[in-house]
Image (cartoon, rainbow, N blue to C red; front, side, top):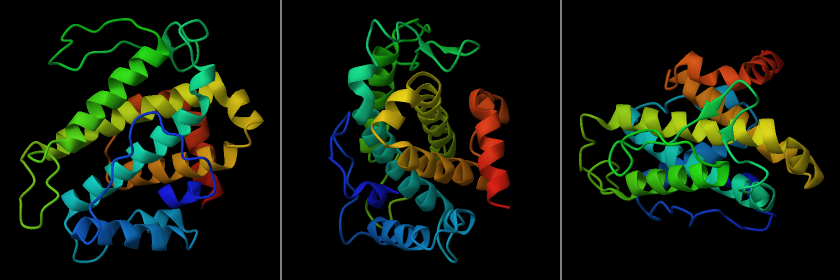
Length: 216
């Protein structure tokens, strides 16, 4: 979780999304951080007793956005129009951007452009109080789960791109432990609540199996 990065430079790709202190969601985030500190990630992702599933998914989605924001922020100088002229995760997987609103037909673009579109789009969803209500008692919309699934599916693509195209840079920066812990947490979370279709996870399937087998 975010606390993993406490000792590092706080360079982020986009502004950090803060959960208001004193809110119930802030308390949930603190609970999640405390549980994570125990080192048992499978347990840390489980829905706390008596809590609302939508709220738990919302809090964690915001946190994953912040984590990926920081991780990608550390390697932006290596992810350029020249080095990454397409948004890919290895030779077999290429992503084209569409958000259904501003860009309806998928467009082929460079990785930095794609990730900029993606993180801006995610930020817009997280800032939308009708989708991600921060006030107690305000209900989540009926389409919340499908929006959350789309956000997480797209955030996965940033992990996939970093692992496939920039892992050497991550190692040079000695950030691989942060990346691996963050990704393991992300994967255990989406597996716990079945939030990303298995086919979407294919670019990192070997790594996912390796992380899972280590934890058994």
